[in-house]
Length: 501
Image 1: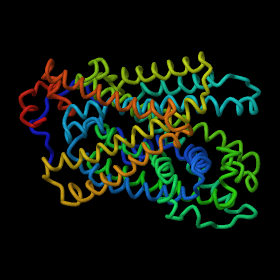
Image 2: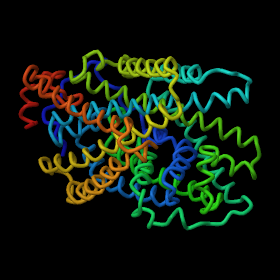
Image 3: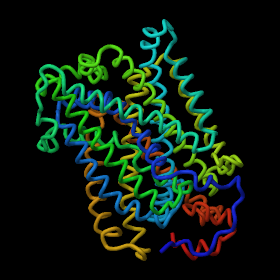
Image 4: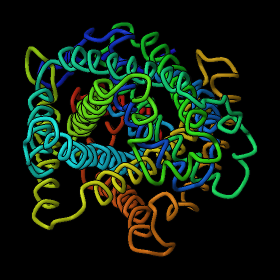
């Protein structure tokens, strides 16, 4: 049973996202593109091996998939009652109260922007030597980053279905290449199937926390299926199916590819090779049986994998801003869409401005785009999303405690409680291992700034919500209601009756 209460007034075209544009497959493409499979397999896995020295990355992926699947039972059940492009923001608002929801929204904007701008640094740094080798073009990283930025900026104001088709093409190509390269590694001379990548004991020893968090970073994006609920066909089925399909596909692909890589390199040698070769390890192992042409293709698709992630995160961020603008939590200008396409234009332009500013600042200051932008930004963003998923797990429990109608005990109590406890443990391990995750000394500036920045923004968001409650109660009453926002529909009294917090 929905908690929608009174029927909402008709919204103007400029205040709503496009309806009935996305099916299950399109949502899966958005979700998996944010996860960036090839980037994770070729980038995150070797990094995890080098940093932790643990080879159990495959079992870590499988373990994380189980935790996220348990969390998703209650998560997608809540999606059947709430349709809102704000996702975490809306869920926390309606599950734990509006102040915490606004705090969560500010953390979400920072975390996803960290992922987004990190991709520009990674793309530029990785493309710079490749373009020099392929085309004889000696362009600095920031020029190449700006080229990717321009492409994403243009697509960001187009119809979401156009973005879906672009992502589908890029994603299918990188998944096929990942599978082909992994199979090729199995055929290399000296390959010996190893049980080390699947050894569960690596999940309990020293460094296991960092290993688990690196694994969960590879799934970031799975939770965004609900962001597209307003634009999906039959959201009740589309969101749940897309979420479970994405988790399953990501887990199987990562576990298989990482097992093949470690087995091909040798479990006793792979850590040293990962330290020395980095992202090239995955490509170098497959180059023997496939040749240099395949190696170049792998590098090209590694770059398009980053572009796909940029497009996906750009769409996610612009929809968060749209949701917040529509409800008046951010300036109303962000709550407008383009008539005809339904694209959240102003939110998209704002995100493009942030990306441009970061690229310019890093270029002028001469900061390292690979370590100080791509690696730190991606890791920090992953921590932020993990904390948000954990908070949302408790929001699911709170929501169904007040609205148990329409869901059985498994969906509203058992799975949400188990998922919340498991995620709380992983979040503790993440914060405890933050220095290891960032590759810095404990107590150093990055190890302190990253978690503190999320804490400060969360508190600031809570204080802003409390200000709205005192100074602008009509806007406060509509927080988390999406298209039913009291401030948009005029249903102020109805919203107050529906929501108690």
